[in-house]
Image 1 (cartoon, rainbow, N blue to C red):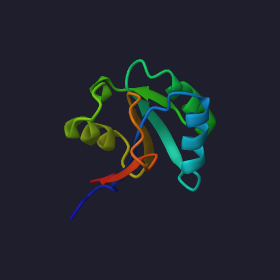
Image 2: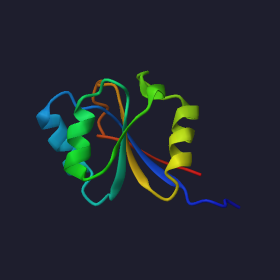
Image 3: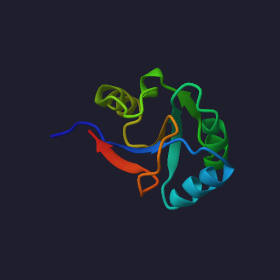
Image 4: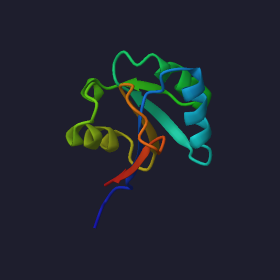
Length: 104
Protein backbone atom coordinates (compact mmCIF):
# COMPACT_ATOMS: atom_id res chain seq x y z
CA UNK A 1 0.00 0.00 0.00
CA UNK A 2 1.49 3.32 -1.09
CA UNK A 3 1.50 6.10 1.46
CA UNK A 4 1.93 8.80 -1.19
CA UNK A 5 0.05 9.87 -4.23
CA UNK A 6 1.91 8.97 -7.40
CA UNK A 7 3.64 11.67 -9.41
CA UNK A 8 2.79 11.88 -13.10
CA UNK A 9 5.86 12.64 -15.19
CA UNK A 10 5.38 13.69 -18.81
CA UNK A 11 8.82 12.97 -20.29
CA UNK A 12 9.55 14.70 -23.59
CA UNK A 13 12.56 15.63 -25.66
CA UNK A 14 12.89 19.41 -25.63
CA UNK A 15 11.40 21.00 -28.74
CA UNK A 16 13.95 22.43 -31.16
CA UNK A 17 11.96 25.52 -32.18
CA UNK A 18 8.91 27.67 -31.42
CA UNK A 19 6.65 25.49 -33.59
CA UNK A 20 7.70 22.41 -31.63
CA UNK A 21 7.12 24.24 -28.33
CA UNK A 22 3.62 25.26 -29.45
CA UNK A 23 2.86 21.68 -30.51
CA UNK A 24 3.98 20.33 -27.15
CA UNK A 25 1.85 22.85 -25.26
CA UNK A 26 -1.13 21.89 -27.44
CA UNK A 27 -0.50 18.20 -26.69
CA UNK A 28 -0.58 19.01 -22.97
CA UNK A 29 -4.10 20.45 -23.16
CA UNK A 30 -6.12 18.74 -20.47
CA UNK A 31 -3.09 18.13 -18.22
CA UNK A 32 -2.54 20.50 -15.30
CA UNK A 33 1.24 20.77 -15.35
CA UNK A 34 2.48 22.09 -12.00
CA UNK A 35 6.22 22.17 -12.76
CA UNK A 36 8.67 21.97 -15.64
CA UNK A 37 11.94 20.17 -14.98
CA UNK A 38 14.64 20.50 -17.62
CA UNK A 39 18.10 19.26 -18.38
CA UNK A 40 20.71 22.01 -17.98
CA UNK A 41 21.11 24.06 -21.13
CA UNK A 42 17.60 23.35 -22.45
CA UNK A 43 16.71 26.98 -23.14
CA UNK A 44 13.16 26.24 -24.34
CA UNK A 45 12.31 25.11 -20.80
CA UNK A 46 11.83 28.73 -19.73
CA UNK A 47 9.40 29.40 -22.59
CA UNK A 48 7.41 26.24 -21.84
CA UNK A 49 7.24 27.03 -18.12
CA UNK A 50 5.91 30.50 -18.91
CA UNK A 51 3.33 29.17 -21.39
CA UNK A 52 2.16 26.58 -18.85
CA UNK A 53 2.25 28.98 -15.89
CA UNK A 54 4.49 26.58 -13.96
CA UNK A 55 7.76 26.98 -12.08
CA UNK A 56 10.98 25.86 -13.78
CA UNK A 57 13.55 23.55 -12.20
CA UNK A 58 16.93 22.31 -13.46
CA UNK A 59 18.01 18.68 -13.00
CA UNK A 60 21.54 17.67 -13.99
CA UNK A 61 20.53 14.01 -14.10
CA UNK A 62 18.49 14.69 -17.25
CA UNK A 63 21.51 15.49 -19.43
CA UNK A 64 21.50 12.04 -21.09
CA UNK A 65 19.15 11.27 -23.99
CA UNK A 66 17.37 8.64 -21.89
CA UNK A 67 16.79 9.73 -18.28
CA UNK A 68 18.15 7.50 -15.55
CA UNK A 69 15.34 5.81 -13.56
CA UNK A 70 16.90 7.05 -10.31
CA UNK A 71 16.66 10.64 -11.57
CA UNK A 72 13.00 10.18 -12.49
CA UNK A 73 12.34 8.65 -9.06
CA UNK A 74 13.98 11.67 -7.39
CA UNK A 75 11.81 14.06 -9.41
CA UNK A 76 8.71 12.03 -8.52
CA UNK A 77 9.62 12.13 -4.82
CA UNK A 78 9.62 15.93 -4.95
CA UNK A 79 6.34 16.15 -6.85
CA UNK A 80 3.95 13.62 -5.28
CA UNK A 81 0.39 14.11 -6.49
CA UNK A 82 1.51 16.51 -9.23
CA UNK A 83 1.90 16.39 -12.99
CA UNK A 84 5.37 17.48 -14.13
CA UNK A 85 6.75 18.09 -17.61
CA UNK A 86 10.25 16.59 -17.73
CA UNK A 87 12.38 17.88 -20.62
CA UNK A 88 15.33 15.84 -21.82
CA UNK A 89 17.84 17.18 -24.37
CA UNK A 90 16.40 17.70 -27.86
CA UNK A 91 16.06 14.44 -29.75
CA UNK A 92 14.26 12.73 -32.56
CA UNK A 93 10.47 12.73 -32.50
CA UNK A 94 9.18 9.31 -31.43
CA UNK A 95 5.61 9.65 -32.57
CA UNK A 96 3.97 10.72 -29.31
CA UNK A 97 5.05 14.15 -28.03
CA UNK A 98 5.71 12.77 -24.53
CA UNK A 99 5.70 9.58 -22.48
CA UNK A 100 3.40 9.52 -19.43
CA UNK A 101 4.87 7.81 -16.36
CA UNK A 102 3.12 7.42 -13.02
CA UNK A 103 5.67 6.79 -10.29
CA UNK A 104 4.83 5.82 -6.71
